[in-house]
Amino acid sequence: ETGVTQSPTHLIKTRGQQVTLRCSSQSGHNTVSWYQQALGQGPQFIFQYYREEENGRGNFPPRFSGLQFPNYSSELNVNALELDDSALYLCASSLDPWTGSTDTQYFGPGTRLTVL
Amino acid sequence: SQELEQSPQSLIVQEGKNLTINCTSSKTLYGLYWYKQKYGEGLIFLMMLQKGGEEKSHEKITAKLDEKKQQSSLHITASQPSHAGIYLCGADDSGAGSYQLTFGKGTKLSVIP
Image (cartoon, rainbow over all chains, first blue to last red; front, side, top):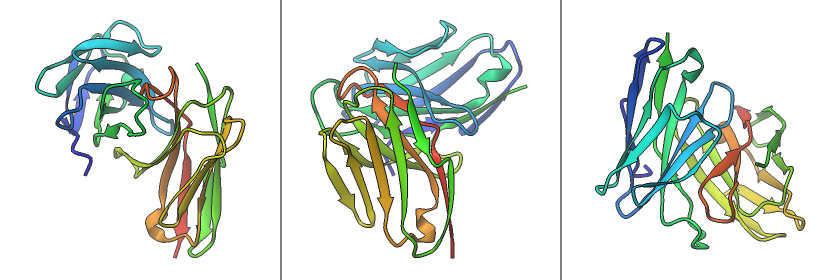
């Protein structure tokens, strides 16, 4: 158990809809990163939030957005869903970035999103 | 951004055999992480390497980062069915400890009893 939870476990949406995925970080972890993992691929970095501000973004369009709340929870929102958005979405929580810590980030079990 | 190439893509070994998975980067690695993933589930942290020449072991798994910090290997000794899964290497893309990781595509390991 990593102490990171995600909801829902599975989700089915149709093209053009909007979706919100939720993550609850480990207590004390003020950094959350979101990843998209397509079938048979490694996870791809979407963005990171640190102290409720976006702190880095991968190669994803603006229709992917996020929020982080003071209670260690966060959301990933995806607008105008496309078929290629079907994937496992993982969140990972960690301590402050760039502190030289040898700690790692702890991943949740993921949300499986299917877009029809 | 850097790219990580893992080899082999898949591996089938007999229980008790040793095996090695490689991870090669197109750039110098600031921090290299190894994770294990059961199909469709979250990633389980195995080890993190930062210094060139560094080697870490946990139970029957040993990971090394070469001196030039562009390649890492994961070695499993006397494999067991519990070692089966997908092994992923990930690297800090924005400096050490950024937690903004680029991952390889993974190596799928099957262990035959």
